[in-house]
Length: 511
Image (cartoon, rainbow, N blue to C red; front, side, top):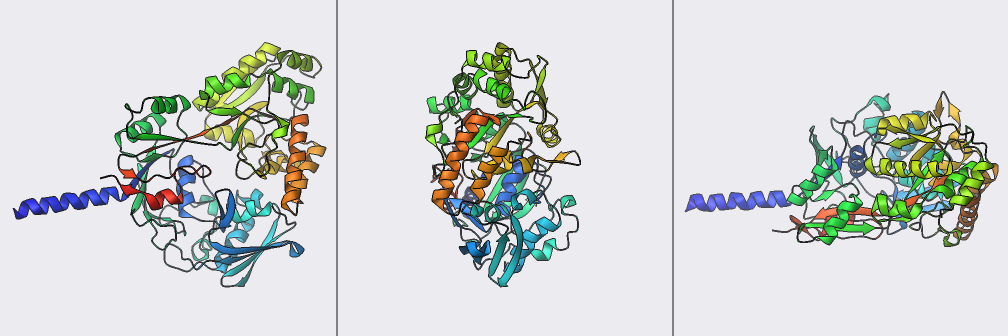
């Protein structure tokens, strides 16, 4: 009898331990947990839980993360932030010294996040819990950048790192995020919830990020209950199957969230005929956007606005600009009046199946008006290399503009497309260099009120529709998938999706 009771107790404890561990799947490899050296989607996700920024966004509003309060001083072009009483994972206090070090370290070491600090001039400590961030110019958009993008790292650890881009940070990474590192294996990253964090859930002990190389295997794991959530957008066709056949997938749920990523065609403006407005407009009008929505995304996408900014950016989106529409006869007429000489152009595209499907359709649409295109298919690293070297004619790319619409400046302003040592200095891979567009983009940065900001974005969107620096294609719906086999209490936020703070706090074992 005692032996039976003992075995029962062991089983109960095992069940509790299993239930307090959230199992999620991520795509790619994890070779580094260095926040300045993120290369894969899996690394980006894990690092996002390890480290925090001063400010963050919740329900479309800028709120404090490590900072409990912040004030903008327009007269001094500065932002003053009061820090919360917080600690790093090793128990050391997080102070103004760490914040000042984090910002200045990026500039001193010329780290990849440097372009985000284009207008930043320095950080100063006012006292142990107060810091001043200084900028060349200050506006209402500045909160969306440096304070929300720069991870705060412990000075005591990183001041000893002379070459941060050669530092994998996988032995004992120390941050202040809701998850703290436990161990890394070839198959997973094991993280424990940092109980000193204000958002740490009471009902969960740990989260294991299972590294998978294939979306299909990851989904099968979700169906079986091996994974509770998958950190990628579900294929639209598969999502429709799940939603239309609930009996076949009783434990799998799908959440459709308004998308903020805009698929675009980049033109390399450094070359002819891509620098010809008539050619760019010919490409714009050649495409069948509704067919792309139905054939490539099974209807789970929207045709993009001519003004590029997606609907999700509700504060600045201008509906009056209208969406892109096909007009083949106009496209052919524009092509005749362009500098296109009939030569075959390359369309750089990711090896991702969705991107390749879209590229094949685009190739056919362009052939229909007389433009010859061959696909240049590259893996993730090859794609990035080609873009950074501006080694393409046309390219399929995407802009994330739903939450941080000001990023359009970094994608299209001429200063962000300059070449140095054979590399593009910023994110304007196409080398867009249109003076009136530069002025409109600059206006975003000198908007000192929300009204001025909205007006500046309205002017920008109308101009983008005229000068067509890129072709806006589609805005895919974000399709998140999770399992209710092991946990109940999932909270679907229309702005943050499924894996949000409220979900983590609400999850309870299903058995």
